[in-house]
Length: 184
View 1 (cartoon, one colour):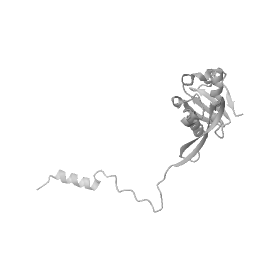
View 2: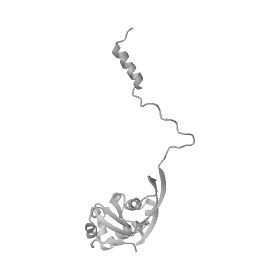
View 3: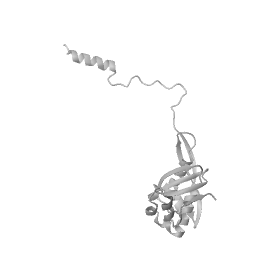
């Protein structure tokens, strides 16, 4: 049986080219070596909730994948606010803790940026998502939880709060003038 020259030529090319193979397999790792894994760190965060009409810090533990050493203050502030904005856990709720925040407010954080030891924190849709925070008693509780949580992060000495990039808009919602909050 004779084969057409084109089929023989194509078969030779496939054999020489490896039939689409990506080349030889990678070498086995050296004895005693492990594939690189990303390092992880358990981080203890302090967030402020209210119980019995008083602010009270609660501890939360978060597992954090480390890419390049210790987490930055921006990362820690973001994690802490993410925990706060998710509201009390079921166990904290049973212990009498309460907050303006819940699963529906988990995504309030737009960004965190550090300028020296000042955290510039931008939130979204505050008035629509946390409307009761604008009352006089509500704004005090709201600010105690926000400021207490952020000042729980080492290295933060001051905070500039913003709503969609505006310090004035954030503070007008709370019926106050734009300001930088400093650690007491």
